[in-house]
Length: 94
Image (cartoon, rainbow, N blue to C red; front, side, top):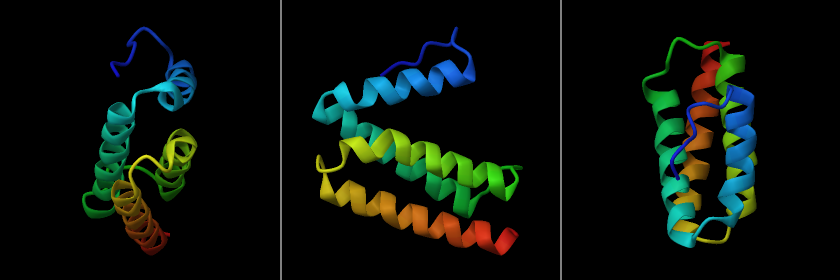
């Protein structure tokens, strides 16, 4: 799932939200693993983002991934664990 670099940030997010639910199961698994890794990184090596921006990223990731739940329970559990860890780290930064 290559991203179109000519799109604005908002257009990119909208395109991804539309594309992911129609993707193959393999592509959905890759997206789940990628977002789980990104969210784990938010918790363990946070970027120079405000806690609100970090939470916005998590909400956006869930908007993308909630429609594909059911494709891989193991990856979904890893995603949920990453989100819990990130939210704990975000709360500690507030």
